Image (cartoon, rainbow, N blue to C red; front, side):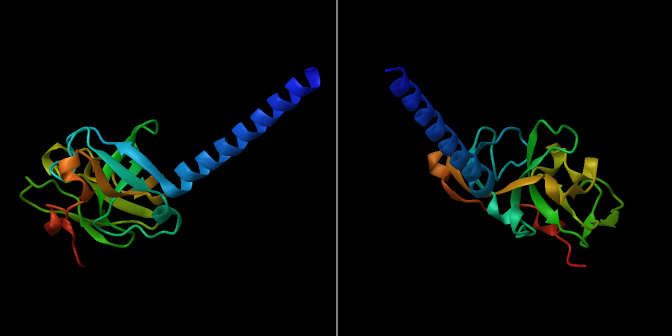
Length: 166
């Protein structure tokens, strides 16, 4: 009797660990659902929109200019940020705010990306904390899940002029 109970308990524990490992790998390497908060990505992503983030792109270094990514905040590692990639390593980026009369530029260092929110006037991004290490990127947002009337792939950046070709 005790042997049967112990056997079932260990079997249940084994299945729990196996499924836990599978779930961890799925969320770490494949992707997951993310609830976005804050106004920095408006109008593309509104506060409380739900999106799907895939994580394979970061592992295979497939992040491109224009992609919207989830990254660990350089200011607060306990929180995540949702921003658009404006520049990759070696790219020339505009580091001044839209209201500045004199525009200044810089180059993104090796192993970093330049992230900005679509709502330039209400976004804390690389213009404040500088280039973000590639290792802080958690995933790339593929499409919006909620609200249902906005379901689908995300639209292009309203700030396309911020992408420099030099």
